[in-house]
Length: 450
Image (cartoon, rainbow, N blue to C red):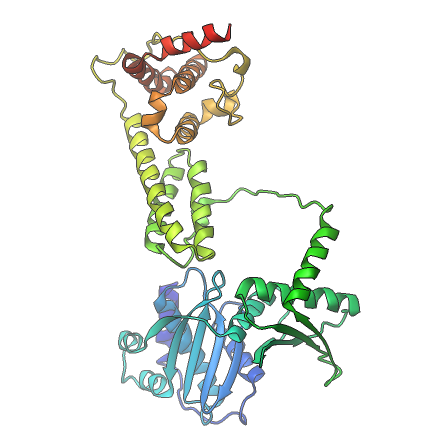
């Protein structure tokens, strides 16, 4: 992304920066249209704009993959587009990049007309320009701004409606456009949903929320609803009760880990490092499904603002991934400790100790639903899942049920003429049996059952 944007910046040096007046004082929609026409931001990115005392204020959403330098470049291109539009009316452009996952966070970049002119005339190099422009992260405390950010993000996937919000005394007022096909029931449902989500997402301290729908065709025609917090609570309970019998089916689709990027937020460098290592393991065919779930759980923690919890969780996951990397390396170069390995192709003296009732799957009774054909195809993934269930390789070795797992895996591979692949698992069984005597433990368990 950096390379593409740098090329875009470089191209501006050859374009004309003769800022000739184009229109009268531009409206908010004029500013948005100029940015969209310049194709500065990704298609469909939600933009809000305002102009006051020669300064333009642009609010948009930060791309999850964008770096601070990317934000600076986008801000410069936005400023250039607006100053070309109205050079006599705009002397500074302030761009706010909201975090779509955490609406109380945003990055701010301010670009002056002098910055743009200096670069266009060659007085500043690209690196000097980027170095001279500051970017800072700020906390959004203003209730109206947080409400607007939430609504902008929500509407980004829908129509390009204009949304405004402001605080009037103890009332938070939201003004948006009425869609052509909305009847009174639609307005009631939409207004209630907007008000409830504003309270949930922004934690507003306003006593009342007014939601107004302006008719874009019949100018001056407005339909509005006003809620107090007690009324919203009662409505929420009523809706929950009315909708309780409706079922929502959860459908999980397979995620290609190679396309995933760490979201913006706390401990991003640590999360990106773990993600890279998981991708490497995934390319090698190593089982990482349990690790993937933990990683996405941590990403959710970050998006919800649970930074301390995420920081602690990523440390633990990093250690688990390191253990898996070590096991993968050991399995690849497996050599028994103590005595020399048996000659290649030799069947090892591994007892068949899996549970008869689990001959086709779950031989250790630990669950997981693995079928034999899948175990034979991906033995590393199978073992990794079992180790994760038992809190790591060391704990697994101490568990008699894991001995069943190794015995079952060894013989399934051997029976499928994969003797060389079976050998490391068989050797591991023999080593932990010599250390922990699991066979004796399992025999005692069977006697107790009988």
